Length: 194
Image (tube, rainbow, N blue to C red; front, side, top):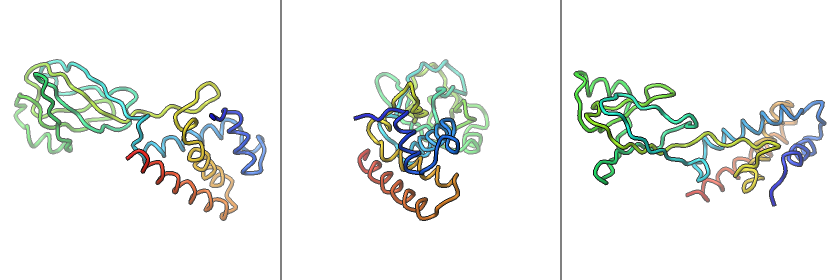
């Protein structure tokens, strides 16, 4: 059964034995968000995997990354129903590989900045590009349940309790207990996703 947001906040306050004067809704919501982002950085789980297919305009060196992308898993070029994976490299490699701005079917890509990737060689025509990526996880709020709140409640709870006991500066035995439980839940969740 899915826990409601208000019940989750109450549960956190019960575990920490403090009231809303110390752990306000806003503060716990920030701890929830911190935990969601931490989980997303440690576990490549199904709910945050996404892909986008776009027709890249010919001879464009750069391609915009989707707004909800936090990490690129792979980039493929689809040409005549053939899929070719591009190799991820550093921007310095891209510059060394293609100093004369040669064109052709791209073989490599690199993160140019937080909004764009760059290709080498520069595309010689319009290609269909599929970007597989990790999206920004949804945030558990009073108006939105998430995959974690529905299916990984203990993982979310232990992560938030680690944040809370760190914020409350103790007791260390409780912080260590929930940190250990959180790490165990992360490992179990990662194994499930494999």
